[in-house]
Amino acid sequence: MAVALDMIVGKWKPIIIQHLIHMETLRFNELRKLMPDITQRMLTLQLRELEEQDIIRRIIYPQIPPKVEYSLTDHGKSIEPLVDALHYWGLFHVEHMEKKLAFYSEV
Image 1 (cartoon, rainbow, N blue to C red):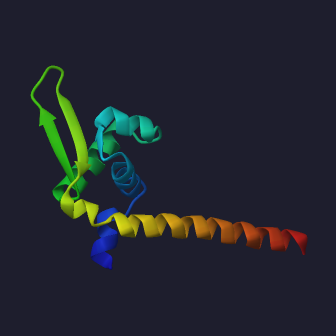
Image 2: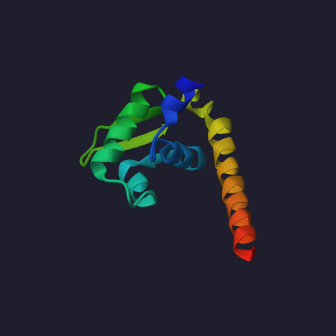
Protein backbone atom coordinates (compact mmCIF):
# COMPACT_ATOMS: atom_id res chain seq x y z
CA MET A 1 0.00 0.00 0.00
CA ALA A 2 2.85 2.38 0.82
CA VAL A 3 4.32 2.01 -2.67
CA ALA A 4 0.96 2.75 -4.31
CA LEU A 5 0.33 5.79 -2.14
CA ASP A 6 3.85 7.07 -2.75
CA MET A 7 3.14 7.13 -6.51
CA ILE A 8 0.08 9.35 -6.20
CA VAL A 9 0.63 11.21 -2.94
CA GLY A 10 0.35 14.97 -3.04
CA LYS A 11 -2.09 17.55 -4.21
CA TRP A 12 -1.38 17.45 -7.94
CA LYS A 13 -0.44 13.94 -9.06
CA PRO A 14 -3.94 12.45 -8.62
CA ILE A 15 -5.44 15.41 -10.48
CA ILE A 16 -2.96 15.09 -13.35
CA ILE A 17 -3.66 11.37 -13.58
CA GLN A 18 -7.42 11.92 -13.46
CA HIS A 19 -7.25 14.46 -16.30
CA LEU A 20 -5.17 12.09 -18.41
CA ILE A 21 -7.61 9.24 -17.72
CA HIS A 22 -10.49 11.32 -19.04
CA MET A 23 -8.76 13.28 -21.80
CA GLU A 24 -6.17 10.63 -22.82
CA THR A 25 -3.60 13.08 -24.25
CA LEU A 26 -2.91 16.62 -23.13
CA ARG A 27 -0.31 19.25 -23.85
CA PHE A 28 1.46 21.09 -21.05
CA ASN A 29 -0.58 24.29 -21.42
CA GLU A 30 -3.83 22.31 -21.54
CA LEU A 31 -2.93 20.78 -18.19
CA ARG A 32 -2.13 24.26 -16.83
CA LYS A 33 -5.56 25.52 -17.91
CA LEU A 34 -7.26 22.56 -16.24
CA MET A 35 -5.35 23.26 -13.01
CA PRO A 36 -5.11 27.07 -12.76
CA ASP A 37 -3.72 27.00 -9.20
CA ILE A 38 -0.62 24.96 -10.06
CA THR A 39 2.58 26.80 -10.91
CA GLN A 40 4.51 26.01 -14.07
CA ARG A 41 7.44 24.78 -11.97
CA MET A 42 5.27 22.46 -9.86
CA LEU A 43 3.52 21.02 -12.92
CA THR A 44 6.89 20.33 -14.54
CA LEU A 45 8.15 18.65 -11.38
CA GLN A 46 5.06 16.48 -10.98
CA LEU A 47 5.07 15.45 -14.64
CA ARG A 48 8.76 14.49 -14.42
CA GLU A 49 8.15 12.37 -11.32
CA LEU A 50 5.22 10.59 -12.95
CA GLU A 51 7.30 10.02 -16.08
CA GLU A 52 10.17 8.57 -14.02
CA GLN A 53 7.74 6.12 -12.44
CA ASP A 54 6.42 5.06 -15.88
CA ILE A 55 2.94 6.37 -15.07
CA ILE A 56 2.90 8.91 -17.92
CA ARG A 57 4.61 9.16 -21.29
CA ARG A 58 6.03 12.38 -22.67
CA ILE A 59 6.21 12.71 -26.45
CA ILE A 60 8.20 15.59 -27.95
CA TYR A 61 7.43 16.49 -31.56
CA PRO A 62 10.39 18.07 -33.38
CA GLN A 63 8.79 21.23 -34.68
CA ILE A 64 8.95 24.92 -33.97
CA PRO A 65 7.65 25.75 -31.47
CA PRO A 66 8.20 22.33 -29.85
CA LYS A 67 5.05 20.36 -29.18
CA VAL A 68 4.99 18.11 -26.09
CA GLU A 69 2.13 15.76 -25.26
CA TYR A 70 1.48 13.74 -22.12
CA SER A 71 -0.55 10.56 -21.82
CA LEU A 72 -0.79 7.57 -19.51
CA THR A 73 1.41 4.59 -20.23
CA ASP A 74 -0.17 1.15 -20.28
CA HIS A 75 1.22 0.72 -16.78
CA GLY A 76 -0.23 4.10 -15.79
CA LYS A 77 -3.68 3.09 -17.06
CA SER A 78 -3.72 0.32 -14.47
CA ILE A 79 -4.08 2.98 -11.76
CA GLU A 80 -7.49 4.11 -13.07
CA PRO A 81 -9.57 1.89 -10.71
CA LEU A 82 -7.64 3.23 -7.73
CA VAL A 83 -8.08 6.87 -8.76
CA ASP A 84 -11.79 6.30 -9.45
CA ALA A 85 -12.25 4.63 -6.06
CA LEU A 86 -10.52 7.54 -4.31
CA HIS A 87 -12.71 10.01 -6.23
CA TYR A 88 -15.95 8.28 -5.24
CA TRP A 89 -14.83 7.81 -1.66
CA GLY A 90 -14.02 11.54 -1.52
CA LEU A 91 -17.53 12.39 -2.72
CA PHE A 92 -19.01 9.99 -0.15
CA HIS A 93 -16.89 11.55 2.60
CA VAL A 94 -17.96 15.10 1.72
CA GLU A 95 -21.61 14.02 1.81
CA HIS A 96 -21.04 12.23 5.14
CA MET A 97 -19.45 15.31 6.69
CA GLU A 98 -22.23 17.59 5.41
CA LYS A 99 -24.83 15.32 7.05
CA LYS A 100 -22.84 15.26 10.26
CA LEU A 101 -22.53 19.05 10.29
CA ALA A 102 -26.25 19.45 9.57
CA PHE A 103 -27.12 17.07 12.42
CA TYR A 104 -24.98 18.93 14.95
CA SER A 105 -26.24 22.34 13.85
CA GLU A 106 -29.82 21.18 14.55
CA VAL A 107 -28.97 19.96 18.06
